[in-house]
Image 1 (cartoon, rainbow, N blue to C red):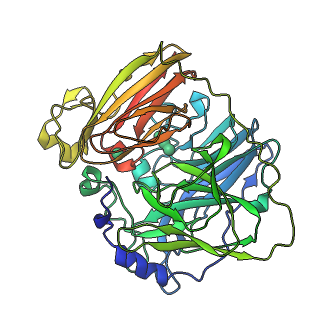
Image 2: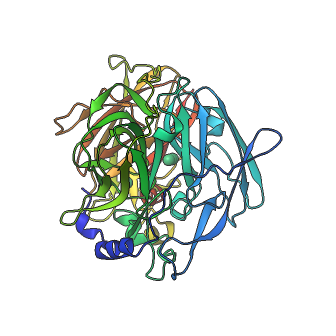
Length: 471
Ligand code: C2O
Ligand code: CU
């Protein structure tokens, strides 16, 4: 369970929020240069930006395209996404296209699907976006460091027949940053084993689309799609959308057949998860961060009279034809999650060797899947293309985790102790509570080597990382 008392600087965050930049109407940037060969050029590089108000230091960040929140990439389903990543950082990097059922060599996982792109070098990503929905991209080399410094952006795949026009389709990228009083990023604590062994790097300052406490302007009585994306390194966001007429349209990029009631008054968005919500407001409302005793708004939606434009066209979701898992013939692979603070480790293998307790500080390996920390030579499992896989996870740790499969969406077919049936939804990332057991199922139909890891990026770096193979 997320420990909200450890929202260490909650008062500070509130204080910071109050002192923040004047509210600005906020939208993603689209300033991407397109080269003659049709590639969007996105450079990853250092940049100074103000996170806090005027008069404080600029923060030393690493950004895509120099903007807080990398350039938003929008394509139509079935279209090719062509991006040339230019690495202006001093360390190697790569881009992962989170949630896209992508061809394996474009998945951007350094060390598994490609070599990390060296400083000064570039890499061309070229793939088809097969499903309409809300996705995002982020660095996938030393992600705990690179994503935490700002290397991420939204990837929106639009329906062929637009469901909302652009004005009524809002991207809401949520991040928490760990900043110092002077407004700079707290850089010293990157790699802190305290974070790695506990809940990961939790921030103390929230932004939406790179802005603190932004204001969106909506027209009264018109329907909007809000695409909520949690890009935080480790924070599960407890949220409340304080308005009445809302419907859930999609989870993790995959449309529901029909809009559903929801989301509930308090809902959780884990790291890397997305939810698309349709709102129709008569009055101003806010997006609130729900804490035990002091919830607070961190984005405002100001509603003014409509000019009568018709934003919401018709609900005709682009449902993907994901292959339905066949539980009868499925192969089940069990995975026990261990380690971390207040957990038992038992014997742990790292790089083929038994790790001694005394090695942990040096290797930073603190968590394990089935006793193995991080990627082994052999995959967790290897299956034939088209087989149904069930992963049966038991979280024997004291922490909550956000588990993510690369290249595949899955259904949650069983969750211990849960009342709600989640099996109707496709997801690419799910939360598992401490001591909980969850089974997910999917058809392994995408050939290649795929990661399966915790999206709390410090946990992944510290061992919660494995891979499977589809042949
Ligand atoms: Cu969002 Cu392994 O990634
Ligand atoms: Cu985790």
